[in-house]
Length: 220
Length: 175
Image (tube, rainbow over all chains, first blue to last red; front, side):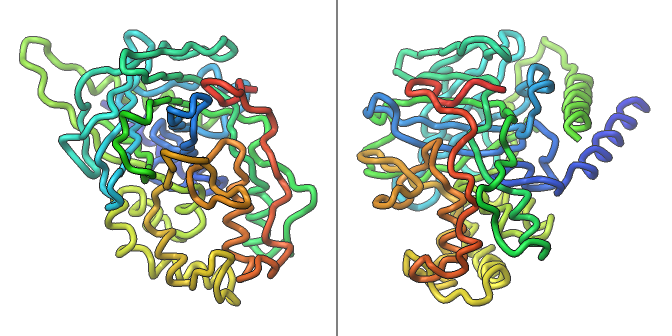
């Protein structure tokens, strides 16, 4: 018990030290999730190589130096959830849930499926539609494909985000008049933990456009 | 700093593992997961929420409720960033623009091109190589013609530092 309290104190201290020092697209945006596996860095949604499919990318745990990347892990108690609204009311009609299974070291994908619970509390819905063993740092990507055509990859990737964040902060602080040309990419040479899910558009309903947002949820 | 973060993550997992002992002879109760972080468009929470309390609250407010809770705060922040804001390149007033932003969802086309902005299509998705920061800077600082505050409307980092892949999983291998 004492050990646990000590550990919690250490975590709190680490959070205070790192909190608010550096953040961007959604990297370390908020004190409650900083330095935790629930910290989202970015969401991407784009048409796949096969134009009949849509790609969803969830990046988390940003600013990993190459030397720290091999040790970065997905968390068995976190669900990474893409929320999809296909009738323009900003309430999720479908979810794609990604849950790490430690025993098989794999990322398991549920959905797209209409959730029985909407909003800030979720449970895993339905059955696994695709899964892939997490790709180790430095290894070729392992791709899982399910029967419904859902594809998944999970593992470390280069952070695709680019921004001269340090200069932007200097501008906000009043110590720089504008951006430099050329700028300096604050995210150059850093990695993230990525989950990439490719889904046939036919599984997303019939709307010409969807509203998407990404959530991380922690076991309670 | 990176080492500290890593230690925190490792310590975090240790605590979770230690507190998860359970017996196997009872039916498993439904496991629920509670929201921690959330995002739609890039950098919205980072740029438009100022206080730590608002940043945390924004992350656990469902998009359907975000507009009512945050639009006025976003508008105040927009005018603090750019006191001369009138409209932007999309023709949106301060209240209209922040009304759009406060509901933090990423709209994606299921029928056509998907891009944050490519010169023609606006907010039809987000590709890996979209320069989303320049788009947002232009809309915040560029005025109705996109020509105001020229030193603030692009960061002059125009691409990722590694090429993306043409096929799944699309993202570049790690450094």
